[in-house]
Length: 369
Image (cartoon, rainbow, N blue to C red):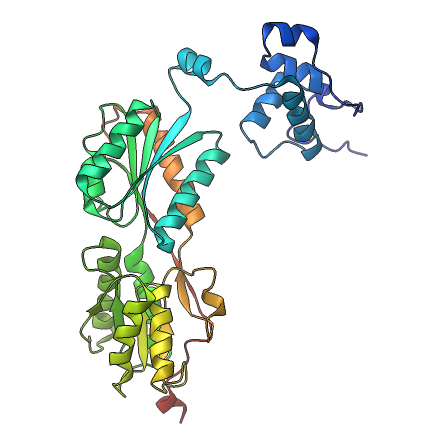
């Protein structure tokens, strides 16, 4: 009978049945704790301690807990200063975000930070009050002064891209978000917002709606404009009438205001909203006007917020995978850090969105009857 293969984190030193409380050796206390002291006390290898420190997933739970217990007993702290001097790397990444409650940018920040920590990097976050060029440039300078190995910036506006061009020579930078255009001087990673808008608009046309109205986000945000472009291109390709675009902020108040206007038009049967918060306002406006969703009007949002499935009715929407966005951004940054003088054109990575159909869309009532 074949012998089962060992788990990825196993080595001969890791199989120690002794679970008695760990006591720090006197010698370690006198000279200062090093990693080999932790390995010896936990009964594991030096490599296993390193994997625990870097939050590697292929470590058994019981092994991880024993290593952490040894670290607590020895009061062990990783000597980052020594590591930086030895490798000339701080093993710290900088992230530039901005103060907002918007779901997309907040989720991008979380996705990037989670990916960096999973890869064993520390994270230093610099936030700005607004996306002004001067403020973003100051954030770049702050992170550079902390000797970060690279910077990932959430870049919903071109001002962020411009500021990153002034980063110190040799400091790898990646922009994440809607402002990337494919011709930027450094790598960009973003969700394909044009494709997402096409999915939403095509879904409504395929249900039998003659055309689709669009409630857009702010016109000076590239993400908003990309969604307008995808919506308009899909209507043109289908030979459908292209209604005027109505724009506002990314919130329910803007959706409610535009929703009241659209609800007054009996020929409006389908609405694509630039995000789920706008869709929430549209749903309320339609309800107050006596227009039923989806019987009278179908509504599609964008983002797939965690609460979208609990709207009344549950909202059909376009899902953005912010976890994947963070992982792709980190992978691009690490490649860029490894070859900063490469003459190849900077990468422009697009993450594909997907449609989540729910109960807010259906065949128009006129076709049903």
